[in-house]
Image 1 (cartoon, helix red, strand yellow):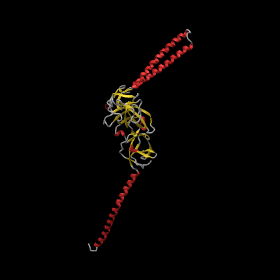
Image 2 (cartoon, one colour; image 1 turned 30 degrees about the vertical axis):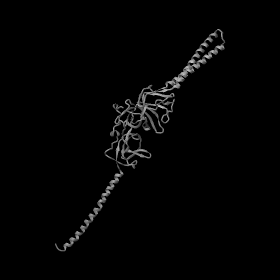
Image 3 (tube, helix red, strand yellow; image 1 turned 90 degrees about the vertical axis):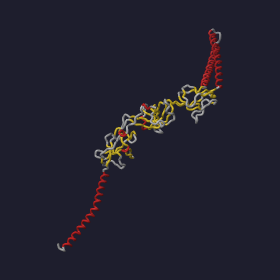
Image 4 (cartoon, one colour; image 1 turned 60 degrees about the vertical axis):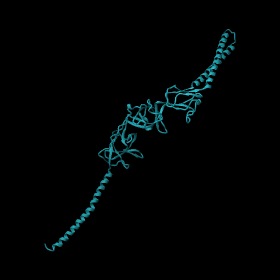
Length: 406
């Protein structure tokens, strides 16, 4: 190799090195841009056809538990007032005492009324004597009239006098009956079997007939009695559920005093009309309380088992779109395009709702659709469908077992 070949080689390597450096710099700048462009293209494609999960409408459960607050009230509730004025001679029952129908609660002493009754009986006896005499006289005059011993006018006068004496006797008898009835009210009695919840009198207290029922503090009330062996619970059923609550609907009660205990009850009757103010149906529920576990005035939770013979389809709440024109669901057609349809909501199961109208079964309904989804939009359906049945998540609530009756 000659000395002249060395500079030629150096001049040849320099352009090659520069070309390699330029290629490396070009690759470092272009490759990330190409990768970013590919990712952007993929993202645009994904946004153009978003992936969605679909659910299929399932048959809703036939039973639904409706939980409502209720107030326990006695089956019968009475304020006992005096029907005659006088002084309390003696009282026999205090609060908490169990009484039977007709049992004496207190005696009222009425000396003036007793005297009036004696006078009325004396007036009755006098009226009876006057009537007997007038009747015998009229009879004799009628006999003499047959022999023309007396005039027709005199005989009719005696007969009229007898009729007047009979009317006076009947008035006296009515007065005696009235006063006797008032005297019978000297004994204050219980109107039904129950428990005395209030006693507002003591020996020597002056009581007046009638009192003033309905005023604050019930002035004049002697006793208060409540029937507690059977209780009433009143609940207000929302209008949407009113049609499912009928006499015979299974129901049970729970209270905070007895955790885990269920008191079996029955729907006795309903108002049969919706309250226009609260839009609810007033329902009465009766429960046996033979062991006196429940107390009137207590708070209870009422569990109603609402039954339907023709349940509709159900969908998760997450599948609903609340649009200005109504509740809507987004369905995927056979061409993988969105079709929006309006639906009507029936029963509410919490995380699931019954669809009264709008779906017929077999549709692919999008779960958790975006608010911006539109009709005709192309989508991709995920491979794994989301669960779509309230029955698959939790069984329908069962009524109270008979063995746990209160």
